[in-house]
Length: 173
Ligand code: SF4
Image 1 (cartoon, rainbow, N blue to C red):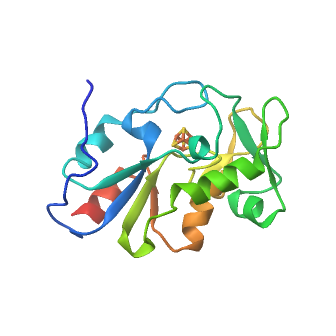
Image 2 (tube, helix red, strand yellow):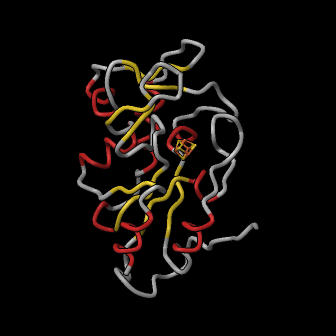
């Protein structure tokens, strides 16, 4: 079922002036590498009446839709920002710069004190908060944040994935 959220909707409880960053693909935007989305109806319902800002760091970094999938080789998103690991697409292109620029662009113009939290797609090389794919392109995950999550963690923004709905409910209560 298709539902629309109004990003301008004002919070009714919790932190009335604060914004929740959300991976656009979780809200049904077709920005995934394969041109599809990861719509999560339960999350959509939870966020009704909340002020959200949808972000897609890979799109913000100039990557096209669809695109070759990418994974982080040699570390996690923090290591990519530090220059000790790389984001490589399945066709062998080094997209580290695009991922870093997209992460920065996704929060440009946002005051950090205005952010309540981020809810980001699990295991993505950009958005994964606790786990990311391990660089083998075999669907295996390892611990660590993606590039966008790493940037938010450095700025001490709380991050949850769509697999942590119970924790999100507690935060929103
Ligand atoms: S970068 Fe994040 S928001 Fe964009 S498609 Fe990937 S997981 Fe979704």
